[in-house]
Length: 211
Image (tube, rainbow, N blue to C red; front, side, top):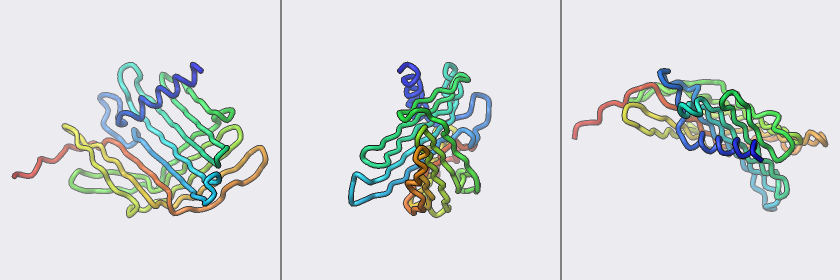
């Protein structure tokens, strides 16, 4: 319980603050958060599939330093619910999983594009592949987005901008495998994926227009 409690607590600390680089380092999209969601409705509510996952890499403070936190909630039907958490902090890798072990929690980002506006240039990955693996299940969500999928939310602070890109209606190929039985439970492409990518931009806020 102690190991799981530490991991869960650190995860909540991480996702409650914006990702940021360590002191005296310029902001970079290496320190970012990502959110991922897939939902497959069914008239039989007990057969609905719902998956949500989140990741974040940030320098928290002088005590916790750099933290890499990840969590996932996987509901394959009304009876199958898998929770996974992962935290790297102080050079220690902490995990918790209610289905044996968390064997893999990986996010691969590619197809980077630049978006330029009055606040400067931001880079985002149009493709993100999320892999979650517990003792029984292997889940892969392969998001292939387009710029038109995104809304950009800007959070200006005193001398910098946190930029959050939210994508809805993103095509995502979902595969779910029961490793013990060898059953492929899902292998389909959906058009209703949700994705998010946010980080601090290394820019200055432009002056407000004169009234």
